[in-house]
Length: 440
Image (tube, rainbow, N blue to C red; front, top):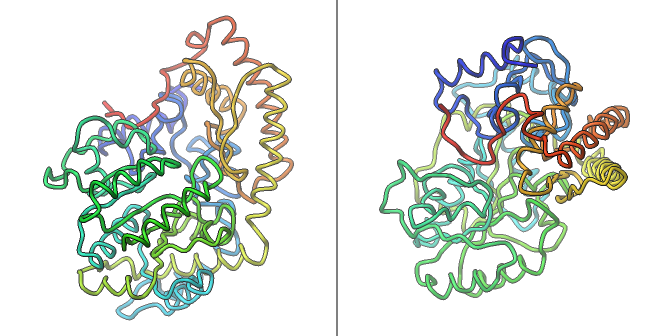
């Protein structure tokens, strides 16, 4: 496949001239997958299947809408609920009653909480949670662990020397446009590094009012570490926020922290909450959440109906069908079979991540080129593939068998390319990007 007969690849080149960065999400840039060859755009999506602009059919064994569609694309029950809501009017001068229903449901799922505010996206949800926590504590500094979006409070981390956000998820995030006055207000610490966290408290304790952390991203939660952070936050009167935008609805219906008996002051949910429809929730203890009323926090489209309706139906399906059990069972089987293939072929891929989100770590210093070749050859077999697989309930046994047959063929090809040192020669275009890079 080349850009010449790939309408999506051609449109992507046009988009880069019209839209700075090409699109609205770094993780969906064609350069993150297969520069000059990725189909980039879709006409239709259903279950785990996608049809591109040329009506070419693919199975999606990659990011599944960057983790938003655990029930599969265009899930019929969610879609029906959304269509009915739109037909009844998705916006008016009055509020939709479903937001109260959703708030009640989320407080029911998270019994440590009393109060909820809603947004539409993950980045603004994190910014909202930080605003509320700062309003409550009257302290400016935030310590954090993990990836928390694009807003000024987070990118301010890189106003100092070096790329301090590199170890959190994405390298190369320049703080251009972020006010210099925010320097030293966002303080990163690493997962598992309790000494590093204690050093932040020791150095900045008088001004440190907020800690935000992901419960997990690349593996099962480090419970001992999270408990230690939680205890230290209590001792120092620091608001503890769990960012479960990615981790929520992967291990259970709600936040993963519910499985481990650790209570934050605020929890953020998003992504899978609406199964592809925009909705974000900031859940918290009333004494802290009420600080939102001391600040101005308001947005027209936070009141739009579709997200609330989609979330209510999604939660219902998760609870009734034990969706998380299905996701992890499918992912565990998939990871087992992929590992077995790699062992038989003699190709040293490492597998990390929770079972519902297997992550492939390609070997050697040629890892990025191997990943690109893997994506290229899987695409030729009708499969969208990268180094992460967000498993959905739409990934049936039949779909997985098709994927595994292609996976075995491509792994054999990668093994030969590595042994013969012909990886770059087998690529039909440039090597993919690994983080933020300016697009020309």
